[in-house]
Image (cartoon, rainbow, N blue to C red; front, side, top):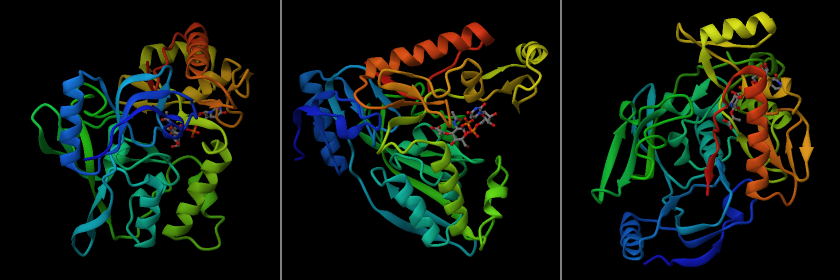
Length: 338
Ligand code: EPU
């Protein structure tokens, strides 16, 4: 059976590069090993936390319970038609390696999600998204271990209840399921999504325009805007883009005629959190080893030895100033532990 480590460092398991530790830590690679761990945790009454690559987590404190880092891997084609392909991928596969694999095989769909940090199993949890594509557009079903029944269960796309950076695995049933595999429906048709922001403009500068150069374009755009977590600890967007009532938006528009916005249903409007934070003067600011990234203020960075609590307190100051200036409550995208 898989070993359970005690007092295990989580430094290599979170992209903020926070030094914290897990009371117990284990990396199961099969459902049987998971079952054993559940029994182990139950006997000792341990709280459990499942992690992927820790690219969306902020550890404020040590975690006294059992951290489970599932290692189910593999990328396998399970079905194919003239126009589509079904691919089953293990939860531990690195997301960007999977995207690269798809591009190499001319499977269309995930290319706009190039270079997003994290594991495949995390993609459905927060319905990762970028440049006009979300995980929900590609997921056929999700396989998970149900801690309550001890059985393997499968969630259709609809059953996942996907929403903007949200799913059934993040709200409501957060602690019940452990994702083992994700099955994607990808396309063989050469259709590219160039609608978001300046993607088209950048893409057209490429000498050749195909699936592979679209991936290169997305990587270039991301590298210009976002800090590389290997160099500067971060977890991507710290907050979600807030969706506000249209009436509040109309009020704000009177005071800020240039406020960027996107319609979100007939009664709501989505505002870029980056703009709100920028307007409050945080862009490029720094307090000790914590700062707001100069090219994208929605990203909070650990410039060195910041603790999880330093980052959390900095983020609360940002939240407070946005609330004071705009009356808008920012909601964290990052999951705070402790
Ligand atoms: N903006 C500013 N100042 C800045 C940067 C941006 O005012 O310094 C404003 C601009 O109006 C810009 C707008 O913010 O048009 C949107 O910026 P951007 O296109 O960079 O995207 P975002 O809304 O800030 C979202 C996702 C990103 C994803 C990008 C591209 C969320 C919370 N974030 O960011 O996802 O890469 O779109 O699709 O939805 C992540 O989730 O971790 C993440 C990085």
